[in-house]
Image 1 (cartoon, helix red, strand yellow):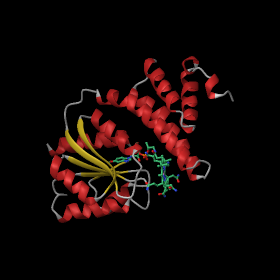
Image 2 (spheres, rainbow, N blue to C red):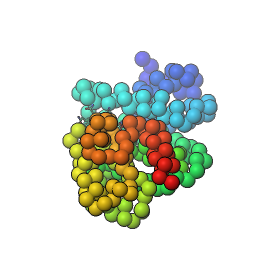
Image 3 (spheres, helix red, strand yellow):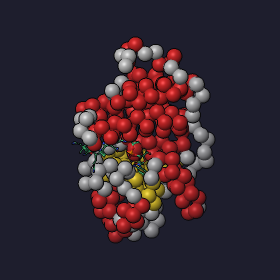
Image 4 (cartoon, helix red, strand yellow):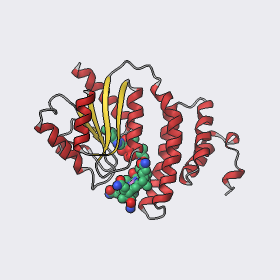
Length: 227
Ligand code: B1M
């Protein structure tokens, strides 16, 4: 295959460009991902399609090879950074949908977990659906969630976890919210690759968000109901 330096991205067909972007994401080539993202947008692709077809699609391949021991943490970090660079271009475009204001959502990745791409993506889609996002970041313990709820008085709380070892902590947070009577007023959405509806039900979450687009729809529907 040709060296990445030899390839002129703007000369590729859409399909070849998306395939090349998946390779570039795999190789952690940040500038190429930024360029590919811009080219697809200039060709009339919607920000959502660029996000899901080129970037998320590319990260799936990285995930498989990480699992199989072909890629290691430093390489995956480069891929994650390249993905974030593409997401930074798409973020203002996804937020610009003109959706009516829906209220505030506090969101964070739970204690012990530093994965933030999925959480950031959910935040972006929620912004596009009209929510104001208060992003607490990663490794968030119950005290930080409680303080943010107190400070920001959100309509919604979102927790993300990507590890089977950190997902039970969502239950710890929900238990504490329940003890304080907060669960009655504050819907809690949980999501992340290892979760499923059954787990969300078992820990008493209000909603399970399978992916970013579905989560934004669910949140909008729920806030609509509460209003
Ligand atoms: Co990590 N990692 N990682 N990793 N990593 C996974 C999760 C893993 C599945 C890889 C694998 O083995 N195949 C595996 C977990 C296995 C398990 O728990 N059973 C794993 C592991 C083991 C680890 C380490 C322990 C590795 C090590 O150190 N030996 C370590 C843990 C660090 C820690 O957190 N304490 C680690 C580290 C890392 C990096 C730092 C290198 C990097 C993270 C960089 C970053 O996030 N800034 C990383 C990455 C990138 C991954 C994979 C490859 C990709 C995750 C990702 O960004 N996906 C991942 C493999 C995989 O998931 N297939 C893996 C793209 C993203 C768009 O999808 O996050 O699923 P996702 O989000 C989706 C949905 O899940 C949902 O919507 C999103 C968009 O559609 N969603 C929500 C997510 N949050 C939501 C919240 C909601 C609603 C929906 O409501 C609030």
